[in-house]
Amino acid sequence: MDEHDVEYEFIDVKKDPLTRDELKELEFKVGLDVLVNKRGRKWRDLGLADKDLSEEELFEQLLEHQVMIKRPVLMKDESVLVGYDEESFEAFIAEEEPEEK
Image 1 (cartoon, rainbow, N blue to C red):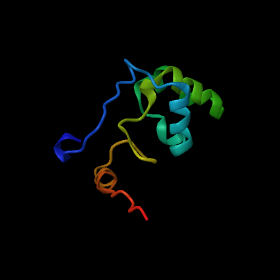
Image 2: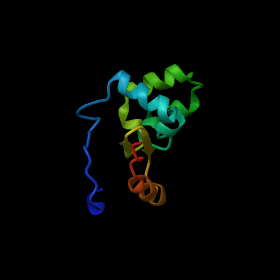
Image 3: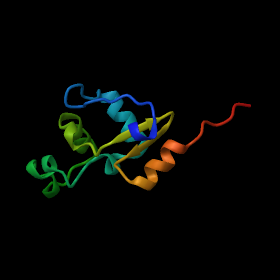
Image 4: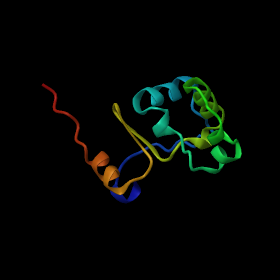
């Protein structure tokens, strides 16, 4: 973000976890499948791959263990980009504001 001169606010979810409502908003916008890092250590340590979790159970696990949120999570207006992919990132930060009529 710095090298692209993009203004941003960094939120460390370890120090300042998302609220239930904030996480619900992200879930609504992108879905739990996109948000959850199923390759991460915490996912493996909790043995969640072997469990058949409902959406609500998965949400509760994510709320409790926010280190399982795939990073970075970029939010701009109503758009959300989760995870790092150079091409998607470039397109995301290049999006222009819609013109007002």
